[in-house]
Image (cartoon, rainbow, N blue to C red):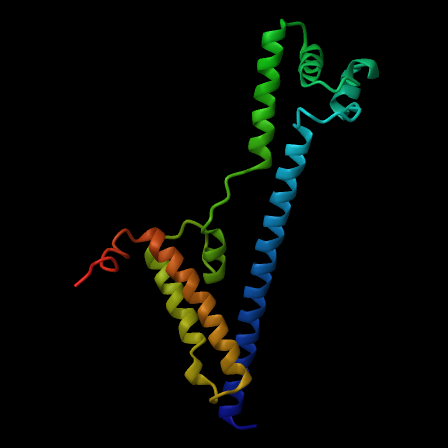
Length: 191
């Protein structure tokens, strides 16, 4: 096997690894979005005040020793009073405040702040929060490795490389727009 074929095989192998990593990142991002949507919908369903189904005891109620007869009421006011009874002796307004505070904490836990640029950092293979110079360096390395002119014209590898290059370009543009305040300054000028 000649030296040129060896280099081409190495490049094709690297190209396959890059494509697999990008595909895996896309699948993970899609799975995370589906999971967040499911958690949000489940929390919305749990907190629906118009839900008329019989409410069952939660594990916290069982551990606190709350009887089933106090938790079977479908109204949200009763649920707040039950949580107030479980948390200790207090008046109703304090129990409602505690319940509302715990509800807000549950919503925050179910909807953590997701960095919209996290996927773009992963595509470029750098850590989240990296500065613009690290983004530019990672972009240049990936583009150099995925240059379409390294492969024969109209080959399968060249098509894969152009697809990878589009994805890397899109991630770079998103990060550049977010990190460089002067990036789009001249795009809006008219002559």
